Length: 453
Image (tube, rainbow, N blue to C red; front, top):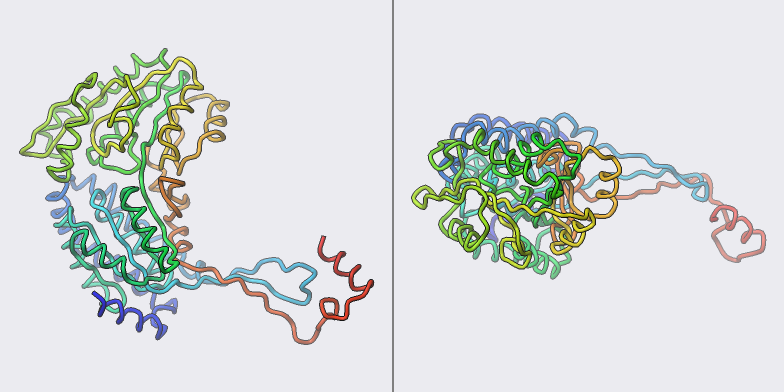
C-alpha cells in the first residue's frame, strides 16, 4: 500500500499527468475498457445487488460513460487559463486563473452504486491531472473485483490503482498523507474521514446522505407525483442516497396519493419478491436492520420479505411519531413513510428534525410554494415535480450541505473539485507607478482613495 502511494507520488512529481495528451489518452482508455468489460460489470452487479441490465446501465454504467464523453469533449477548455478583469489600480497588468491538479488522490467508494460512485469521481480526478488510489466497498465484492480488473487494464499502477479490503484497509489508507480525499458514504464514517484528513490539512469532498423529504402540496398532479415517487424510492430497492425517505402530504390529498402510490407499486414492481429485475438488499445485516424498522408500525401496504433472496417488497407506512428509528435514521431501503399535515408551516419543523437533507423533492403547481420552499429550507439539491434525476445532469453540481456533505461534483464540477485554481496577476515591466511606495504624501493618498473605493 505504502509502496504504491510512493510510486504514484514520484510519478506525479515527475510531471507525467500534467499534459492534455496524457489526460485525454487516459480518459479514452478508461472508456474503452469499460465498454469492453460491460458484460462482466452486468454479471458482477447482478450478483451483488440483483440489478437488471437495464437498471445497471441507466443508473450506473451509462452515467459513467456519459460523464467520460463529457470530460473528453470539454477537457481542453477546462485546462485553458481563464482571463479575468484586472482593476485599474493594477495597471498595467493581466489577471487569470489556471487549474492545477492537487496531486495524489484517495477515492473511497460505497456499495450501493458501486460502479457509478467509484468511476465518476475517478473520471474527474484523472481529467484534472491527479494520480488516484481507489478503494471500493468490500460489501459489493464482485463488482469491486471487476473494477480492479478494469483499472489494471486501463492504467499503470503508478497512475491509478485499486486497493481492495475491509474497513481496516480504509483506516490504514486514511493514515497516509494525501493531497485530496473524496469519500462517499454515511455521515458517521464521513466524520471520521474528515477528522483524519484534518490532521494533514487535506481538502476533502464528503458525499454523505440524510433523510430526503418529499413534499406533496395540494395543487400537485397526484398520479404523476405518485409514479415519480415510486420510481425514485424503489429503484435499487431504495438503496440510494438521494431516494425519497419520507413524504409530507397535504391531508386533503393524502388518500388519493396513497391510492396512486399503491397502484404504481403494483404496476412497476408487481410480485416484487419473485421479480427477477427487483434488486435485493446488499447483505443480511442491512436486511435485518430494515425489518426491525417495521416492528409495531402502522403498515399501509407491503411489508413482506424473503430472507433467502434478501428481498423486501416496496412498503408504505403511516407516520404517527417522529421519535422512532424509522423517522430518525436514514432508511436506505424500500420502506416509505407518509405523514399528512394540516398547516403547510408544519413541514419546516418536521424537516428541521433532520436538517440539511442531501435532497428535497417538491410536487406542486404553485410558483409561490416553490419559491417559499427553495428560500426557507437548506438542502443539497433536488427536483420540482420529480425525484432523483437531478444527479444525472452533467451541468448541475451534485453534493450536500452541512450533515449531508461537503463539496460537489459531476461534469465540469468534477474537474473543478479535483483542481486547485491558481490566481495569477502578471504585471508589465515597462511601467511602475510610484503610488504604493513610500514616502507617502497627500497626493498619493488621494490617488489611492481614487483607485480603492
